[in-house]
Amino acid sequence: MIVRTGIERGVRELQDEEFVPKNNVWCPVGLNSCLVLDNNSHSGFCAGIGPFDVCDRLQESWVEEEYAKKVPTLGELQEQRALDSPLLLYYVLCVLLDDLFMKIPKETVDCVVIGAGVVGIAAARELAMKGREVLVIESASTFGTGISSRNSEVIHAGIYYPPKSLKAIFCVKGRELLYKYCSNHGVPHKQIGKLIVATGSSEIPKLNDLLNRGIENSVDGLKMMEGYEAMRMEPELQCVKALLSPASGIVDSHSLMLSLVGEAENHRTTFCYNTTIIGGHLEGNRLYLHISESEDLEKQIGRFPLHPELILIPKLVVNSAGLSAPSLAKRFNGLNRGVIPASYYARGCYFTLSNIRIPPFNHLIYPIPVDGGLGVHVTLDLDGHVRFGPDVEWIDDIDRISNFLNKFDYSVSVKRVEKFYPEIRRYYPTLKDGSLEPGYAGIRPKLSGPRQSPVDFVIQDEDIHGVPGLINLFGIESPGLTSSMAIAEYIATRFLS
Ligand SMILES: Cc1cc2nc3c(=O)[nH]c(=O)nc-3n(C[C@H](O)[C@H](O)[C@H](O)COP(=O)(O)OP(=O)(O)OC[C@H]3O[C@@H](n4cnc5c(N)ncnc54)[C@H](O)[C@@H]3O)c2cc1C
Image (cartoon, rainbow, N blue to C red; front, side):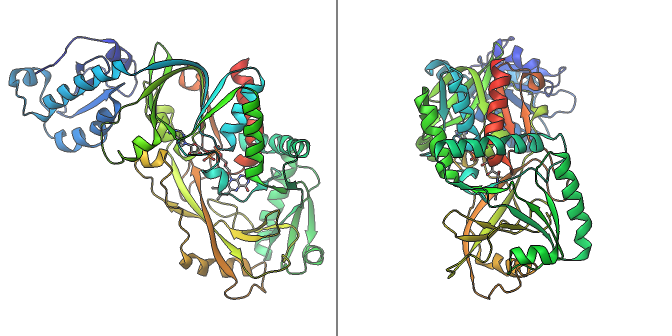
């Protein structure tokens, strides 16, 4: 039986953690993990900087469920010296894994961007253009397979968001940058404008609020219109009043990402696909990233322990893992978990308009926003296809590895269409029965749940979590596509100043 005692490096770091009670019995195991036993309450939990999966699992379920009633004290454990005790077996496992952990190859790199969605790609490009050497790690086989390819592709003007919020600031700035970038780089886009419509008099005050908010956010060209004026512009539309936003537009998000990737690569960025960050740990205030091939990970879903195949030691890390960003941050052992916000997921489905030769609208048509989203709106793509959505359906999280590998359920249930027809007919009354076909779904990375107030983007740096060179991007939902280049600029300025 191997039980190491004494305060070792990993334990020292963990003792600084706020979430670990200070007065408990510490049972260090190896260099990278330890078990904490609470003498008073006879509960116990496990913490460690590796082999983190065992720790994680124990912390979340095994110890709490199985051992909450009676966890032996360290003295008792030492007295027992019984190998059949699961806790002692766990020690042995920890030590064996710990030894393996120490043998994992390690490499020092300059910047690592986690996730090749539009935000990660834009950040990588910006850092690379400022002379940094960037490695983008992406769990999927190519870029832009997450939220960035499952959205409305609308360039938002910046109307909806509370003044001075990050969403408002980045959306307005990002829109300008995006239009300029698309024009200069031949990325297909069109400033087609948008009408936000009130379909009944009870919605007019909300429309007025949006106008005022838009003005406060410095959105140019907003114009309140009477229903008949808007309906003259859009003969298929029905509304009592409308807010025209000429600054809104559409972009081909794939072409945008392709262009950004190309530029980043031209500036010495390396994109590393099929590779997943499975966690990390702090050593000497530096974040060490644990890497695994996605294929290997795929085989291990639901199993533990997970062991990294490589450890990267970067100077800068941008956690832009989209839906996975909070879950991943929770696996950075040593990072104060208290600063990581709770995450929620809201799926949005789209239905497309079938059998049309000419789109019924020339502008984007949006209803008044609803809880969790902007309402089932009309978006047009650059080929003239019309789609309606996204609706809001709150869904549960999935296990962490499935989360990193984007195994969320993106299916569009045909049944949901029944709710679409009445919602769309409020502003498009001539929509024919049977004309909607299932399109695709996207999932919003939310930081607030159902019926809670919307939460702003969260961008955390050293000032918040105390780890130099780490930026966590949480809750980058809409208008994240519009904001991407502004977020990238902000990151580069923060990091490189
Ligand atoms: C339904 C919907 C409609 C929207 N409409 C609009 C809109 O019209 N206009 C607008 O401006 N915004 C819109 N948005 C928001 C916008 O799409 C997102 O804010 C933006 O795409 C987020 O980009 P991202 O790079 O942060 O995330 P993602 O595109 O999801 O990129 C994250 C990447 O990280 C990878 N990854 C995850 N975990 C790991 C790991 N552990 N290791 C390695 N890689 C990992 C994923 O595979 C993924 O490729 C919409 C969002 C949704 C859901």
